[in-house]
Structure formats: C-alpha cells, structure tokens
Amino acid sequence: MTYDIVIRNGTIVTADATFRGDVGINGAQIAAVGQHLEGRETIDAQGLLVMPGGVDGHCHIEQDEADGSVHEDSFSTASASALAGGTTTVVCFSAHLPNGRSLVDQFETYVEKGRRSRIDYAIHQIITNVDEQTIAEGIPEVVRRGVAGLKVFMTYDDFHLGDGDFLKVLEAARNAGTIVSVHCENYEAISFMIRECLARNETSPRYHALSRPPCLEREATYRAMVLAGLIEQKIQIFHVSCPEVVEEIDRARKRGVPVVAETCPQYFVLTGADMDRPGFEGARYMCSPPPRTKADSAGLWSYVRRGVIDVISSDHCGYSYDGPLGKSRFGRDAPFSLVPNGIPGLATRLPLIFDEGVNRGNITLNQFVALVSTNPARRYGLHPRKGTIAPGADADIVLWDPEKTVTITNSLLHHAIDYTPYEGRQVKGWPVMTLSGGRIGMRDNAILAAEGDGSFVAPLKGN
Image 1 (tube, rainbow, N blue to C red):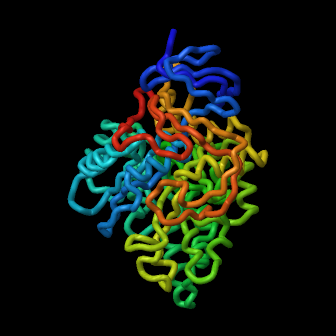
Image 2 (image 1 turned 45 degrees about the vertical axis):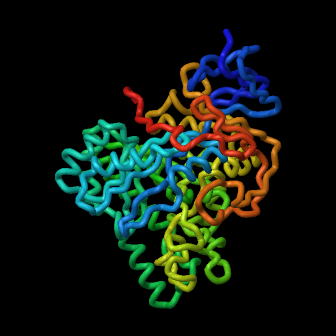
Image 3 (image 1 turned 90 degrees about the horizontal axis):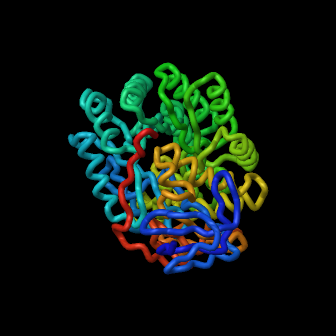
C-alpha cells in the first residue's frame, strides 16, 4: 500500500516502547506503523526521534478576565508557539465571569474563539459561581457538550471558592461524570501574609514567594483532597510546586482518595531566588504557586519517577513584561501584590523537560513521552486519538533531534509575549518538525499551519 506520507528511518518512541520503524499517514490519521512503508511523500527522520505530539493540559489562551481584559496570547499566536515547541493539542480555559451570561453561553463563546487555533484544542471550564443554574443546568450541559473538565481556585480575589461552594462543584462534577482540577493555596492565609508584607514595606517581587510559602499550598491540597474523598469525586491537583505537597497527595492516594497530580517545568528550572533580582526584574518569574528551591526540584523528580506526579503541563499564562496588559501595567515600582501572576511556557515545555529529565537521567525517554503527551491525553479523555503513535490515532507527531543544542531566546518562541523567563538557557534536544492532523505545521521553526487548521476536541465516549 502507498500512503500519503511516510516518515522513514526514525526511532519511534511511545510511552511503552522504543523501536526503529516507519509511520504511514493517510489524511489526518496514522494508518500504519511498520517497516519499509511506501508513501507519495517521504519525510526522512534519520537520526531523529519520532514521538507523539505534546498534549499540554494547562494553557491560558485568549482568556477573558473579570476586569475586562483578555490574555495577550491569542489562539493564533499561542498555537503557533505550541507547534514551535512540539505540542499539537492544548487544553485551555473558558472563564466563568460575573457578566450575567450563563455558563453554557460562556463555554460556547470560548469554543468559537478557538476556531482560529492552528492545532486541536480542548477546554477546561472554570467555575467561580455556584448559583442554582450553574450547578443544576450549566455543569451537566457543558459536560454534554464536550468539556475536558472543571477547574476550581482556592485562592485569588476574583476566583476562589470556599469549602461549601467547592463541595457543590464536586458533587455536580460527580453526577455529570467529569474531573475537577484545583489550584490549591490557602486564600485567607495568603491575604494575611500579603497584608503583613505590605505593612512592612516589603513590596519587591521576591516577597511574592515569601507570601505564598509551601505550607499554604500543602494545607489547601490536603483540604481539597479531604473534600474530594468525602464526595468520592476524582480531582487533579494543578501545578504542584514542591515535594511536601506531593507527600500529602501520595498519602491520600494510599488511603484511596481519587486524586492525581501535575507539575510544570518552572518548578524544575526556576527557584524563588529568580524573583530576588534588582528592581522589577524578578517580576518576570512570578507565578503561583511560586518556584521553590533546588532541593524541592530534586524532590519533585523522585515523585515523578514513582508516578505520583504523572503529567507535566506548561501552565502557560503569558503576561508581557511591558505594555498595558503586562506585569508592569501599574508601573515598575508597583508592589508585588499588583503584578499579574503567570509566565509563558508553551514552546519551552518539551525542550526543558527533555533536557532536565532525559538528558540528566531523571526520567527515561518513554517516561518523557508519557508525561508530556500520553498521560495528559488519557486524563482528559483524548487517548488513543491523541498521545500515541499507532494506527487510528491522529497524525500528531513531533520529529525531535536529541543532539540539537539550542540557546533559548524569545525570538524562537512565536508567542505574543515580549519575554521568556528562560532567555539564554541552553538545552540539548529540540523539535525540528511538528505534524498536526497529518499536515506539517512547523518545519525548522517556521510555522506552516494556518489559523483555523485546528479543531475543538471533546473527550472520547467511554473515557
């Protein structure tokens, strides 16, 4: 048989196996994996790893905020950045705003925003209001329409839910059959710590980390898991920053609590010291929970190897350094409490984890594929359509040069943000081609996919 495209001579890597072989593609799907396949078009992958495209389960893209602003990265720029970094599916966030519109209307409006994406996208629905309509009608209906899961915040003025409201969401999610992901930090305690810092005139970015210590993440994580266990509802703990939090997750899992966890590259390659830079420079590294210490990073790897943490997402939340929507929107002398939390990371997720994980012996190549592609695809009901190289799967594939050494610069990343916190960092291992739905979306850092090439994807039935 002759296929539309054959990727030849590469080393195919999945979560379970590594072997030499060819991949035959017809249309948007993988049609065959074997030896000596013939294609009308041939891509030579000699010396390259052929892996399933990344699935990034935590991306803030063109997201509406309560103050009327919209995140700077549009679906066009964010999906271009994803392709540049070897990612072919993003799971992003529909906001739940106090604007009088129903949850379903807000979800559908966000689905339409995504039509400009160059790659496939799924959606988490944020829940900030637990009125009767949202609980009884909204949540069941967005699940029916294909939401990947719900998200709840335990912190932030405009988003946090108290325990009673969180329990209502957990129960509604259980009844509807979807997962709840949680941002775990203690709102009241953080508010207290911020007030104390400001009263002492401790306003620079370094105090962002000091006002959000690990114990407040640990307490909120424990509390979230207790409530999830009470309702018998599966939850995911987002962006785990340190081993003492994973220790609580591990203990809860052993007790039978239905909890899973993800972390992000910033917790392996940045530290709290990055925020302790002259002037306003530390704002470039501010996210929540904040990066911790090198010892914490080493401890996280041990839990990754054990499978307690089994997904690594980017938590791409890009705010430029300058500009009306950026981190300095209130001036470079603004207190840390007014600086937007979040850093860009779509394009750098896979290179950073490959370099820190595989090259440094923290994880195997197969574990890498599982962490950045297969496991998130499974978690959000997209596997085996996404996250693997097998007949019938979408032809979302990244060709990876494990020997290519790159110095990260913002100019390589294709996002709308004016900086990267990883500027000047050297990594070994870089994507040289990304295929999305059987089409070459990126070749040698040139973006070839057009706006609208991607589609909304819902969890597969039975997942």
